Length: 562
Image (tube, rainbow, N blue to C red):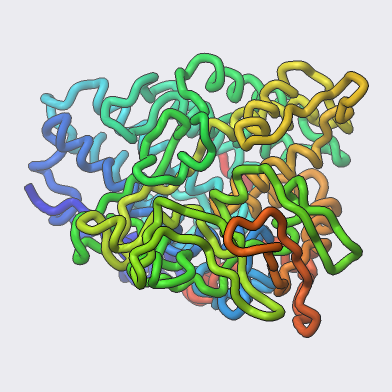
């Protein structure tokens, strides 16, 4: 069998700059036919499944490597880097920004290889390929293409919809498509995927009907804002978001894990809460693109990883302030402790104990150290799974086996709650509150009570937003929550982003070891704390390398006709 791995660079989107007479001036550089379009391949069910398996890992690699948290968390404000990646941290991402370009390439790579999978299956699938396998494999590709376009439209706005690499290769008339029509397209694609994917995965980690319905819940919640009117979200789509979220919750058989921390203690791959995750596997140091490289950039030290380049990364002051129990003492100080278990699983405070991680230097279990005099970092824990002592034989530098969550069941509970609030100020709906509490109490927090003498009052949208920020911090989600909000209430999105503090601070425990509370003070000499988000910089700029090759990207967008 010939090698069918798709090389990432073959799928870079390149729009025409003249009369397209060479591959350098095409929308897509197609994979060479002798490597991918093999008339002797796609002849059995196993071969067709092998062809789509790469859509679960390699094609997403450039996004997962660093861009996922650079855009999703740095730009969204849940985490920051003090000395690196400052364009995304300070909300002034340029067309030359590396992770901006990497994301663009990765998403269009997913689109291109999904298109090729559909084309090749339809053209080359032999009589031994069952109708079921053909249908499911094409549905997988449509799911991936739809999700990639969700990221593209939310980051860059109007983008060109490409559905056939072969037919559209030399089409010089292709232009960007309007935001609303991109959303119509991806919703239609995901509905088709939901109709054709099985309720139970044929292989562990494969997509199911519930993966697609979960995405539909996410899509419809956002699309309710895309098609808002006068700041009022479209009720039809809010209702659809509730329907799909509830269908997944009540009928899929997926369950929340009892412990939030277990979600990120390896091996956690493909657990009962995971609706879709990128499938990474350690297969040796030479297999670049098949393993998870991201943990290396997040781990604060080589003492707890194979490389450990995340020493200047950590939670922002704004993110820290989301956790219940830390009380403001004026404008520059927070003090207290939280029982929210998500903090320990996501960020490291001085004195936090992690028995699953062994330090290389002294072979002891990790107690996150207390250091510094006027600034330090609440380093990233999520996706950091251990040192060479813990992972010998299954990991190496930039090659980790832990999967990346793309959608968890917890999101369904919070989507249902937000969609129930909809255009109101709050909700007291019993099911919505119960679903909110399923996530809230799993984190170790007391139930949110709407009524009664000690009630918390009706459940507001701001409460749901805060819950999402805590639940999905360092999962590349915060930025897209702001984009979703921006569709229907841009001023609120700007106000929230501009109020965030993204500067240095000092975290001091009351004692070491076994601290019982912490005091946090802003670093007085560090002034680069606030971003300025507005109409002019909210969306990402199209990468300059793409614009230089693709003048069509500068033309006004047109509607895409389904």
